[in-house]
Image 1 (cartoon, rainbow, N blue to C red):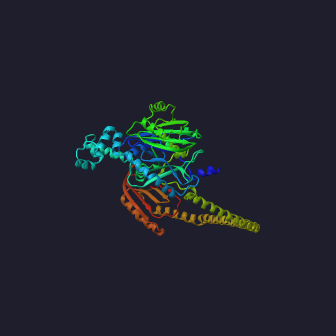
Image 2: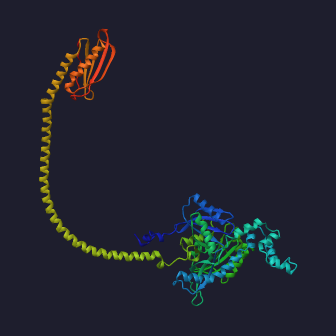
Image 3: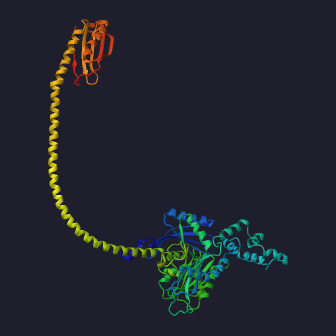
Length: 578
């Protein structure tokens, strides 16, 4: 097993293979599942939501892709609320400072730029983007609010100066209160509360022939309002999905494979989106310049041309175009015509995903060209490996393994000595075992003899029992039966017949007789009881009833039982006496 394969088994080193990439322009939310497939990317599922609340939009997107079969837990977001730019920092790419120091340096450079960027998403611009105001109406409302048009005296100017833009637009009859509420809700997608900003950064190596200020190095940085990022993270968390990073709406397409294939050349990427256009100059595989143009109040083509001319000259060898969905129709042809040179369209794996979404996915999945993109980690700046808890845990584990190895060496030596003593003890134990075996054989012989004597004694006891039965019990029983018959013969009257005598182990002796008269039957019972008293037997269960007997004579049937059983053997005697 290689070191790389071992590292992949560690929980913190496993690479993400599938991610939910979401993109919003402040009006809609688009999502798609982008997965790694070899050296490329594939799109598995996609969804779109136009819900007014961004929390509801996130819930709809996650529910849709999960219904289609996605089972992942990681997501990233592209939003115009994030800003990416290039700054010079006194930090060499190969000598990074601790994350806390880097955060302060980046925040110092990025904070004023982000504040200026946030003002792009004013109420007027959002109303124009929603289609509730035309560009002329938006300008007219702003002029009137600032007293440049439609104000007759100074007192009115004071009144108007305290009115908000939305209130002025409602008063002028251009929008309704409901449309204004929708505008403010959409503004929450792009602006957050608080002044804290979260940052990310990526070093951009200086290409040969390029010059920079002494001690200054180019860094690609990204920033977003901390409160807004946490709101988005909470919205994803409600759907049990982890929002890992946030990226700017334009700029991420610079990781495209087409730019990586020609890293030695000087290239220019124009990434056009609804409301924003970014021109990114790439020299020798690194970002060397960025220009951002807001295009809400101008058409996309003009914004692309303006962004292009800001970064030209010097001239570039190739021009690439990455357009948002719905923005690419005719834009490539128009730019080619206006610039007088070919403009190449970035290839797309799916029509449901923008080049920026692909670029952000390539950055998260650490694919080729990822350094040309920058995002903000929701969990904070990435700590260097040697400072991470996991790395320190591994170092502690290695020290522990060394200690265990030394202990095992000592234990091995002691084990060798113990094995020698064990062999000697084993030899002595073998001798003792042989002696014990011989003794055990004698004990087994004695036990067999004892078992034989026990069996012989059992046979003798059985023979004695049989002898007692034949010599004592049988004569006694024979005498008792003989005496019983003699007594019955002597006490049975002439008008009575003994029909049956039966003996059972449970009931003892039972007698059945028939008499011509009831008196004779009663007299027989008394006489029989007197005859049985010397034997300790008692006449019980006596019953007398009328019944026709032999020869068709009317008489009485007599039944009785002796309550003691003299022997277990059952006998039946039929006696006929007239």
